[in-house]
Amino acid sequence: MHIPRNVTLATIALLLIGLQAFSQQPRLEPLPIKDALAALSFSNFPFSLCPGDEQWIAYQLYDVRRWTRRVGKYGDLTASGVPTLGAGADIWLTNLNTGESRNLTRGQGSNWAFSWSPNGRYMAFYSDRDGRAAVWLWEKATDRFRKLSRSIPRPFMYGHDAPNWTPDSKKILVKVFPDEAMFERLVAEQVADPPKSTEALPQIYHSAADPKRAETSLTLRTDALTAEEVPDFKGDLALIDVSDGTLTTVAKGYVPAGYRLSPDGKKVAFLNAKGASKAGAAFDLVVVSLLSNKSTVVAQNLNQGSLGDRLTWSQASFDLTPFAGIPIQVEVRFSTDGSTLGTQGTAQGFWFDQVEVTNASSIRCDAQSNVCAARPAEVSPAGDPIPLTIAKTGGSYELRFSESAGAATYNVYAGTLASVRSGVYDHDDAGSLCAIGDGTPGDEFVTALTALQDGSYVLVVGANSSGESVYGQATAGPIPATLTSCP
Image 1 (cartoon, one colour):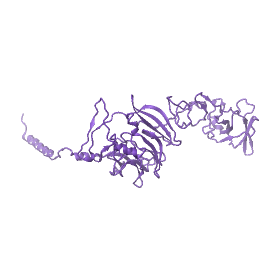
Image 2: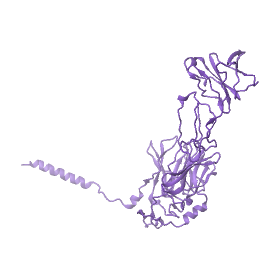
Image 3: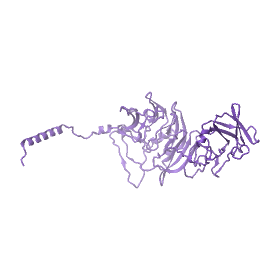
Image 4: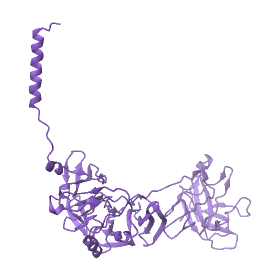
């Protein structure tokens, strides 16, 4: 087949142009080691938005060039107290609107495990920026740093224990060494020999090009602490006042792994390490009341992974609307606030801490016998010789009703007749008269003066320490208790 000369020349010309363009492109070359080491890397510490000013997000980056030699019995801390996951770290901020980023901690020492205050004004974190690991605070408005306490943070194993803030942003909960002597002893001891094992474990080596960073190989831990190692990881849980740095110990003598403040800031839960068991790393779940300083072991020998950080608080609620007007019983299996109902010890089931029941009246019951204390008898029940009557006296109304057996006082609730005609009781909205005393007990009736609006209905109930009497019956069934009952 004959190819026209002009087509052949055009093809050759295009080929020459393509080769020339290709020759002008930059050549790919290996990345120099110094450039690779200069690249910052993300940690597995979570990103965190600033509360109340969510244009700012904080995160933690590593600079491997600033890693320093780990020392001590377990080789998990630097001489200044920085844990494995904090070495060479800085805290960065990025503005999500503008893209502006900055190194907040500016490479001064290692800075790790940060936590925003709930009001967004502060950030607590750990740092050895002055030569020894401690708790530090950054104030967002002034961009200033200050050291909160000389106490040395005590990480559990690898070191991602972050400070916990109280809801009012006035204090932080941290885990620290019981004393400086324990820290000095652990970092002074030689790195322990790798644990003997029948399985092949990887060996980690670090380049000795820089004598300051040279170190012997370390065996990667793949198991839980042994019973012999547990005492070396003891730490105190303490609250630090942000205003003046006052430190108050709330739990001592434990080996806390993960720890969390309750949402209301009144209690702290933590997993206390006990060492390896046949099923894996074993922990006890402990709850401490910050009001009474009372500690309770809620559950024992839990398997929660070697780091013991699977811990969180949650709030549960139950809709009991179908039981309106019907007595029900709530059994509390575990409690930490001194009002335990139900069985403690080895019993399993839901754990309720500070049960709060709303829109209902409470009855005291004995959990062991399931016997409930007696409430007062119904006031002026149907057919009673002394019915509830209302008589106008001056600008007020006089109520007359029967005495209630077992009642210490009486509560009066008012509602609107219009609501009753539509099948709805609204005596929680129309005011109340609480804790009326019986001036002449034993005469079978009680009188009280109250102000009522025209077109109202009235309910009177007896009350004692066990609760209120029943509200009576209507054609549609039991009358529901008031939603805003008298105290």
